[in-house]
Amino acid sequence: MSNEKPSTGHTPHTDESILSAITDQAAQELHPLLEALGKHWKSVTACIVVIIAIVAGRSVYLNHLDSVSDNANLKLQTILTDNSGKELVTALNAFAKDAPSSMKAAVYLEIAQAAQDADDFSAAQNAWKDMAATSDHDVKSLALLGEANALVQQKKYDEAVTILESLQKSTPKAMKPIVASQLAIAAEQAGKYDTALTSYEEMKTIANMPLMEFIDFKIEQLKSLIAKNEKPNESSSS
Image (cartoon, rainbow, N blue to C red; front, side):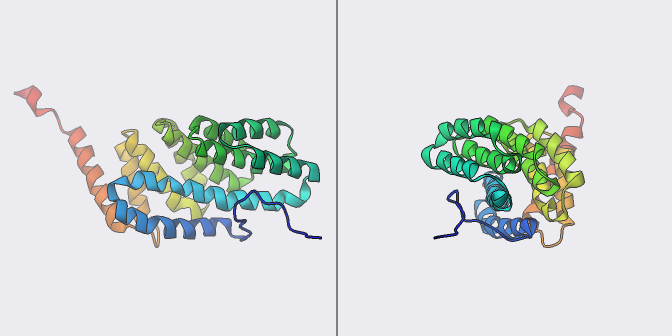
């Protein structure tokens, strides 16, 4: 008889150092893409959250797999197999209400992924928020980052900035490059150029941070925008 544990279809990650895995994988995935795509880097950076979901989510699931009932596991596998798109989001939300407490974070992670796949970023935002409320410190930080990304996808930049600024104060060291880059993106889109500039300047101080030349470019660009906004309107005095 096989002793294999059920899988949700994703490759499981059992590395004890989840955050280090995220940092290493994010750098490997994003560095060549950002160099190639340049001005489209904002869209590419959003895939960091997918990496986080795969690494953290599978680990959350596997860590709790042995502590939940066989019936709950079987029901979750059935839901994941038999549903897709918005129907999957609906089914998982219904399941989450009565899921064992030790399983809830993994279920909310599945909801967030399914909602993002269905381009329902409002539902993804709610799922990330629920995941944060039921997780310990490190996984909570990842969930808050996911929530911020979902807000950015909805163009709710100010709300994303609020979460990211709070997260920046308490985030584990391994996550600081990701939080700083997401905050820089959200703040710039929100028109908060001073905050974006500060984030890029912080990124300059992080060891082994990729794309230093691009960060330098953004710093100079933002300094120019700030100076332009502070300059009095010359036409009004003529």
